[in-house]
Image (cartoon, rainbow, N blue to C red; front, side, top):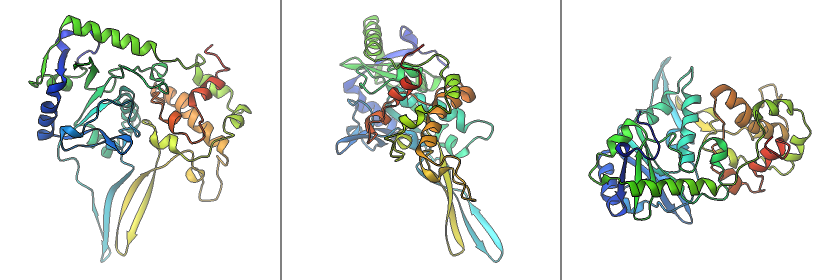
Amino acid sequence: MIPGGYGLPPSSKILKKDRLPSFLERLLEERIVFAPVRRGEVILIREIHAPSEVVLEYENAKESPKSIFFPEREPLFRYRTEKGKVEVDIPPGRERSRVVFGIRPCDARGLLLLDKVLGGEYRDPYYFDKRAETLVVSLACDHPNPSCFCLSMGGGPCSPEGSDLLLLDLSDGYLAEAVSERGAALLEDPAFEKSDEESLAVAKKIKRESEVSMKPVAMKENLEEHLERVFDDPVWKDLTETCLGCGICTYLCPTCYCFDLCDEAAGSSGERIRVWDSCQFPLFTQQASGLNPRPTAKERFRQRIMHKFSYLPKSQAMLGCVGCGRCVTECPVNLDIREVVKSLSGGNGG
């Protein structure tokens, strides 16, 4: 791995904006490319077929790029029964290498948590088939959205974590920083030119200013242990009073990975499908007997917060939130996770 960080000339180059289209053209010749595109009034991360589709002046995409690696609906295998025999067909894996281009650092960092969870003792072959040969080129946030709080979650608006190459907008071009060997190989493209001290100095200034512009989230020290102590506190009922249980927070989240398995069959054939699920849905924990250990919104909301800020830090050494702010901006009842953490922290960071 090539160490990240500004001030490392061998791993940093400049990509002038007028050279970006030719660079993307060459990527498209060799790989499947996903990038931010405009669909109506929103920005989404979608497969592109021409450089002109790409939009890089945006705050963040409506959805995270999680579905590129972990689709909302994914056939795992198809089966047929005939004369007492069962035939199983597994969908073919990826046919071409891929690039996810221009996503924000919070989303790139979110992939690291999915790597940990889906790559544990029981490695998910469907996820890693897509992840293995996918290059991640992220675009640093020089003007973070007010709803973003990645810095408080251990990342940052210019964090290189989870990326192979990090771009930082310098007005007339991008400072491109290699974070991995695969990212360094991209810098060999003729579209890139050598960086200079002035560009590196400007990049440091932009990084510093973007971090300073972010309002920190008040979090209690050792929050994971504190949450266990307040597990039965009445505060959970108060916090959940307005929650609709719609699940939009989990569906838009870069790190939520709950799923359900279902069979769709017709006659002697069918397929097993993995679909996203949400801990916020009443049926998520309902057992065949009818018993539901999380019968109300309070228990379900508590599970989401405990999982992100207590269980995952203990099991994966990483918070289950990257501070992208989607659940803040898209919640229909304005239930702000930052205010939730603040309330659970006693209103201060001590």
